[in-house]
Image (cartoon, rainbow, N blue to C red; front, top):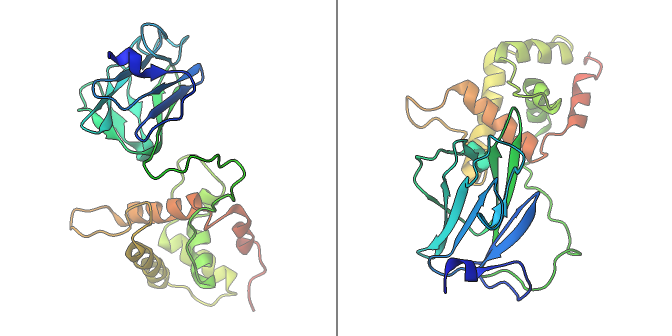
Length: 256
């Protein structure tokens, strides 16, 4: 059986390890059989199995491919433009192939200007239920518990994140201490007090083991403190632990 025989746009139930791929222009399914290849790019079928960015000349005619071998689907970029994966990971044409895990993985093919073309990948898991899940209870995001004073400090530091500004950065500890002193009616917040509050939250969430971004500097040449603050605020906003209504804390009357 050649690789094209393992590609389907039709109906039998997907077995574990099956790859589902979808773009704005179509979808295709590939069975997990050694040597099966699913290609994506601008030309579309039959040259490639999945069309992506058909009117964007920055997208290569055969931009990338996924090959099943060694029990996994391996992604390779053949295009002139980068492919972006989750967590900002980038693939160049010279990058070694990398395996795609089970579950959902979005890929973004860089196009003209600010355009990026989405390719959605889904690899069926071995423990995945066969019944439809459209009416199942929605799972909430993972949120972390914060004390009231910790929330206030983090909202002050991360107010630009809560405004969803592009490429936000945290306030400095000095700026945050001045604003917190005002909000507390003149009760002094020193820079070290703000820093210790943030450090306590960082260490606690790091120990939890499931925070999505790096929070500790274990090596002398590790991430800077500003980077760790950014990681903390980014993760808290992405998880909706901190949300825009929290900005109301900055509008309250100063305490007497």
